[in-house]
Length: 362
Image 1 (cartoon, one colour):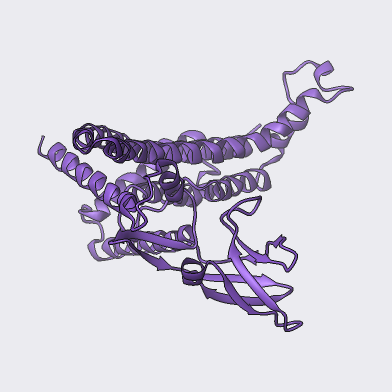
Image 2 (cartoon, helix red, strand yellow):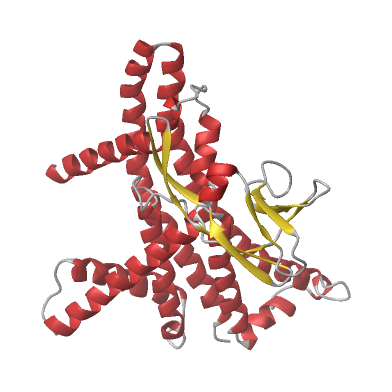
């Protein structure tokens, strides 16, 4: 019971910080009405700066480096220029003409760095800027490396002694991925080949899901709720499955056993369906993880937004709404702790099943 008290207290603090972190914008110096949609979208999307909070009408942010290429030339500058002037001007290194960079406010490139041409059109340069999600990814990867380094050192130091602390937690999760996911989905001859990837992807998703629930800098970024991240992970699974698949795997695709011949010849209906299935599997992996994590962030933000929406109508109503909204936000936050694990488990399990199909014996 004591543990539940700690969890509920932590969740309450997280929700309170979440509100302070994301909704201080409601009292900006220009006294604009609070727009829940804009604040929610700002949180779940990527950006060139990391907004921390607003203090007396002034934004406190971490301004990230912008790195773009145009006509083979590299241009680097700070996103602070966009915050202060909305523009960054420099000279084209090829023809000495002025280049004007800005962040598009509409159109196909909305939210991205573009070059403003003299005729008013926009051109998208090759962009490898360190955005909010990229910085958060660097931080999470560094954290994962440090955690595994500490666990490795603990094994070297303790030898055959019973694990304890962080070592005990990681051993439990690693053994679980090995015995209850990998070995049950992949045959014994091939399981060791795929196990390092499965352990890596499980911890990457699980830790990033948890970090996304901590609403204070340098955490709180929506990494696993970004389709680019989940699509990259799904592509890794796709390429590993199809590059290392054996002949039995491809036999099932192009000459499916147990299927009537007229479904394979002369019109290759079953091979076509199986080939399409090879591409829909990673698509489902990417969308499931992206949608579940993003939905969780939106629901929590939606509950806290309701406080400020009602407060614009009535201060007393906002105070009453805050109690109700925080209770619901805490409840969803507790569910999100479970979802953080479930989504890591599901992605790893499905990847293991695909690897099992790719390495099955005759």
